[in-house]
Length: 189
View (tube, rainbow, N blue to C red):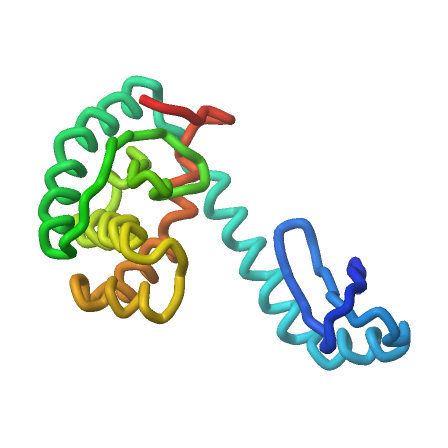
């Protein structure tokens, strides 16, 4: 099995499996033999994850990209739907916010700047309404906590108790939706 080794001041061995391959993160002084043994002990886990990545690649290969017109239509719908949801949840959370921008992005669903400006991906319009709400609540909670601490998630769950359910849906289905964004097309709409 081929793998890349990244050595650092960490104390334990770790594995990462991505579409680029297998990476072993290792302490500076650990021997090559110990690394080889560790990889061997986790061979089944590595193979299972490499298979999952291949299956995902095959599934995404047949996905039809969105046309520029379709992206514009999604953005227009997002400009109607998302500000309404932001206003609703901002009142529940007792927070203010700045500008709301709708973007067409290949990697992010939403973001919140330190000034309270909110960005949302127009592709959210291809998800269930509960997913939109989960992203809106997540970003608005950054108006209280600019981190992902326990306090942050407690606030998210207080306002949107099904957050983890819909966040899981987005993790499982979001890649296929993002794959519909044409080539490198990425920007504000």
